[in-house]
Length: 274
Image 1 (cartoon, one colour):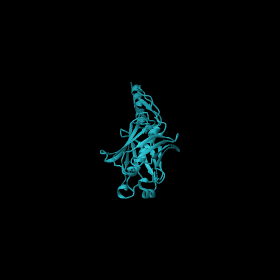
Image 2 (cartoon, rainbow, N blue to C red):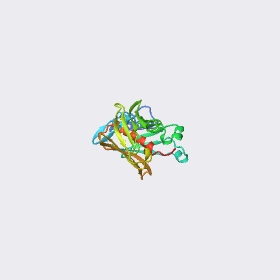
Image 3 (cartoon, one colour):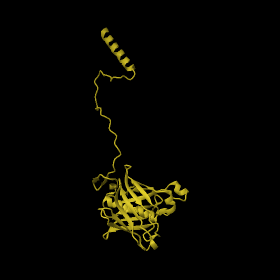
Image 4 (tube, rainbow, N blue to C red):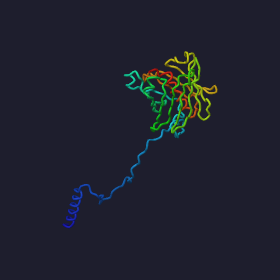
């Protein structure tokens, strides 16, 4: 009896000393039965920033390059972001845009690169480079516009569409017309026009006087392929340039060329500040 009490007292004292030890270096061994409910697992690795994946009509599409995220989209919408410098000064700063999907998701962030001298002297007709970054913060497209005084007195106004690291997809070239704006979208591979962009008819001499809200249709071979309009968006209190792809068979490359034509129209007709 006394021996049993001594054993219990010794066991109790050893448990007290173990409990008072600060953060033991070895794992504690339990005398009673322990139920293991889960096995130890290694920490999950950090997942890098995912590549955008478009899931439309039950098909999963993994883009191989930045502009491939334009595939299967019924429309895209270009919104300009205004800065405080534009409101306080008479000289326009480098423009910033956001290209959104029909659901409002940001597809590209576009930023202009130009010199202050060109913005002061040439205004909206200035030469520039427009860099488009995708969701992975990688450069997907580059639009390059050179200085051109017009289609009659000098070389026609045009815009080149590039993809990194330095490949040309195509270009948009203005046609020398008087009463209706007209542009041709050329493929760099063949060098032939693949689309014709037509603006509203009877828009004034040299097509310089377009209304703030107007409509452009894009066709090839007599078939309507897409359309571009510039409208007032009441929910955001600003004008937006909208592209609607009528032909669902348009490739991602063709959609990128049409996107480049929309940016050229934005600068030629809807950027009025100098």
